[in-house]
Amino acid sequence: MVVVDFWARLRARGALVLALGLLAVSSLSLWAVEAPERFAGTVAVVDGDTLDVGGTRVRLHAIDAPEMDQSCVTQAGRDWACGVWVTRVVQDRYAGAKAQCTRVDTDRYGRTVARCTVRGEDIAGWLVGEGLAFAYVKYGRDYEVLEQRAMRARRGLHRVSLARPSDHRAGRGGIAPEGCAVKGNVSASGERIYHVPGQAFYDRTRISARRGERWFCSEAAAVAAGWRAARR
Image (cartoon, rainbow, N blue to C red; front, side, top):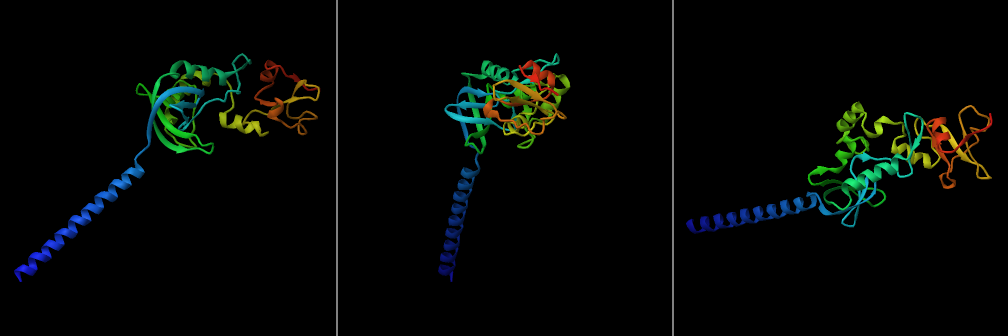
């Protein structure tokens, strides 16, 4: 009985050790799958919210900056290339710096969506806090409070009029950005003419970004950009 009991206990101990070993391996495998992917590299700026970090194309998580072809309207009613301006500010601050990034997702264009820091500074947070980009709450509310503070302080883009970048991108496909109903049309002869709601040919006018046509948020912005009013 003693011998049998000894071997039974030995087998039980072996089974316990095996089970613990399998649990440890399983836990390590799970950690490897769930552990965030981190990478680092030198920053090259593509536009206000897109970077190349050590050769990886990165779309900054949960923010949206003006597109390169996007214009804003100043308080004086002038058209201003704010998309180009934001990109230049980002280049001046971060181009050539060493960034540390954590991957969050991959977008539909194959870009790595990530949070990135330079010298401990969250790039996306700095952009939103300075009014150079907007919190993209559709993909995360990480920077919503920073945007509200920038709005109250009227920093950066919060001092001018512009369509949300997502609305601007939709406008390229012929959809009017919210609050921007003036149609900038290019005639067959190349003349740039704008139409406002209520005019005779407004409903028949279609916007084609490939032809250089665009939407404006005001008549003043259209005139400042070189368009003339259509004959009423």
